[in-house]
Image (cartoon, rainbow, N blue to C red):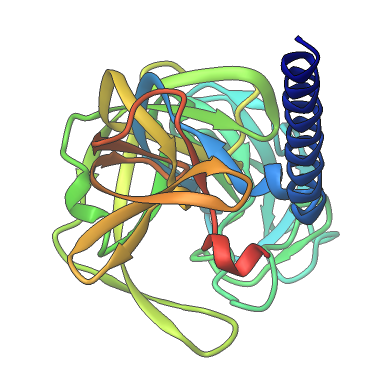
Length: 306
């Protein structure tokens, strides 16, 4: 009986020693793992995936007319200022011909609006300066000099410059959403009205050039807050899928024609699993293959993180 008891005691001692050794080894392994390893591990999940194209553009009017004086002379009085709305026939300013404004040779005549719209400055023909502000006493040297511009605010649109890489992702009539930095909290619906058939050259400040296509977005509604020249952001939903398995795109690695993820087992340990990517957005990718929701993938080669 004593020998059996002694033998049982040794078994207990060995079991406790083994358990302590295993716990110590596990703790040692954890100490070898960097504290920020979790920052390099992302989980796969089920959810919706949208592929959006987002581009910056400029608010323009598709219908604007320049207003010209009856001849050379002087602006005697400004009746309607830049930024005001006018109706066709409204008097904008009084104009007097001649070489001297104090001369009695000519009598002041009104310059009237040729259409309804918003008064703005004329478009400058000088690349390096803006058009001059119209003011009383200003001399006008020729009848071909624009004195103001009337913009039809009902025909506002957004001009985009789309790269040749993305141009075939768009189609005429495609619905889009438009936001403006100057009008926070409001979103405007629109559609693609024009896709230019020929490319333009876009030059960068660093001397590089690229080919871009002009795309015009027609707005379904406008706002009194809108002003020509405002910066706009246009978002087009190109594709969407519901309930797909997706993961952050940085977890996807390519070798030749094949794609892989490094699925974490524990610490730096991993399984290299071949996957088949589907729809991709700028941040996420759809995955098919031997992976499931909840799996954790490395965003960098595990060996490089040690």
